[in-house]
Length: 315
Image 1 (cartoon, helix red, strand yellow):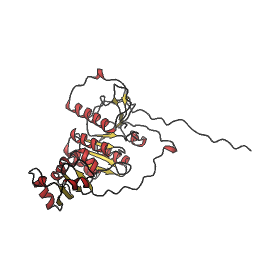
Image 2 (cartoon, rainbow, N blue to C red; image 1 turned 90 degrees about the horizontal axis):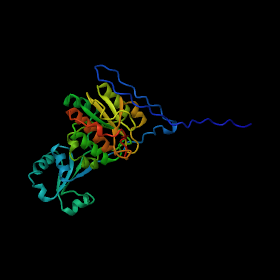
Image 3 (cartoon, rainbow, N blue to C red; image 1 turned 135 degrees about the horizontal axis):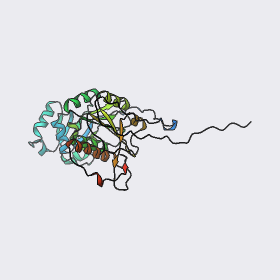
Image 4 (cartoon, rainbow, N blue to C red; image 1 turned 45 degrees about the vertical axis):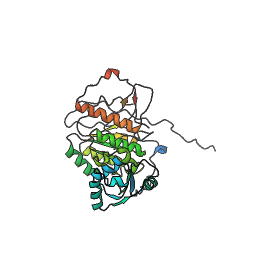
């Protein structure tokens, strides 16, 4: 007897477009961004064990000085002799020593060895693991620091340089905090600190186990969640960036996951004039944050020169 053929459904999952923006009003209901569940093969893989981060190395005058001025806990500091007596560094070095840091006077050759030949500029330090904020604490501090706070949420950014660049831009454009997932994403390491160029001393980062739950917590705290995604009818220039804002930036090469899109109030896109279909995650974050900053400052924009073509924040 012939066995019946298995039925297969090869139709791709369709992602619905976000709803049109409506005029803001007190107590308006949140729109629902309906995203169908992915096929079984596209299910999220089991989370791997969290990587244990050991004390890390930072180097370069600006990075180390920023850590010293912020009273970051440093375990050990290596410096050339002339920097130990430099008036810009000595008070902070003595304060770090009082907090328990070991300070070593070393030769350029030894510093080259410690930093594997990096551009250390005569100083390096071993920092204690970065102290992440609790999400609730970050939200409270953000709301206390600004009437309409902005928190940047990163969906699985794995490149430390992208993470550092986004943190630097977010701080420069007035954001109050950054949220990153605990697994399958870059954490705050020396590479991130180097690229952030001191921004981490002024911008807190929260690390959460469940990003979807974190988005719901932000909503409950009064934040409107905007996800930067491609092929959406609303551009970042059409959004009224009012009230507390949570801006979600997707991973390099993949953009926002379907699960994250489900928890966004709105999905928005970046208008482009060229033929490049996508942007690096840190560039997309910078453009979107600047548009938010520009609108809140009331600067004019000539929309006639903008192409209707849009792009997603892909790497």
